[in-house]
Image (cartoon, rainbow, N blue to C red):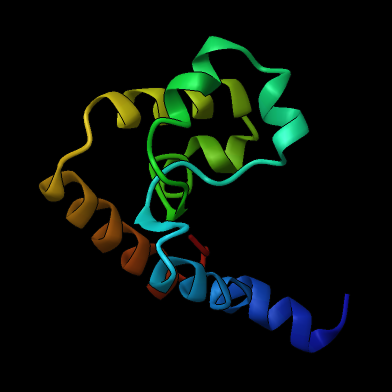
Length: 108
């Protein structure tokens, strides 16, 4: 990793190209993070539910403490809960929490 790469990653600026995917309608600002299709196919029902919504740049797992604990299974549970309860208010809250995390330098 280069110094510039580390700075971009720390500030989550390496995610900026995904805004183009949002503009094209392939992604949302908020939603479960996209997965490699072969990985998604191997996971079963839980991931079927999380794939009923467009993937997002930020979402429940990205702003949770579980991300830092490396607890992917609980993160998938958060994604399932999100997919079952999508609201505009909830999306706004995730966006706000993302900006707070970015302000602390902890990424999104």
